[in-house]
Image (cartoon, rainbow, N blue to C red; front, side):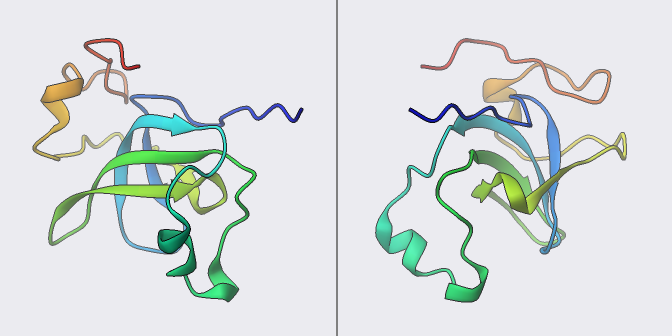
Length: 108
């Protein structure tokens, strides 16, 4: 049995390595847990390996807010010190403090 450790934690702000968006981690899958259809929609030369953590993010870019599902290899920590403005943040997290968002209740 393979043990996978997540590099990023719930409430942490991360940034995508290739695309211009950032977000707050609200859940982590130890390995890929989305649909095969979703995975197949990624261009083959860009597909991440499934055997790594995948993160659910409350994401934002210059134009919109959305939920993103991103492999660990495509993320990096965001040390800008800037909060994220996603409208759903306060449903899950408390106020931005010390560069992160504290979780307000326990997820499954």
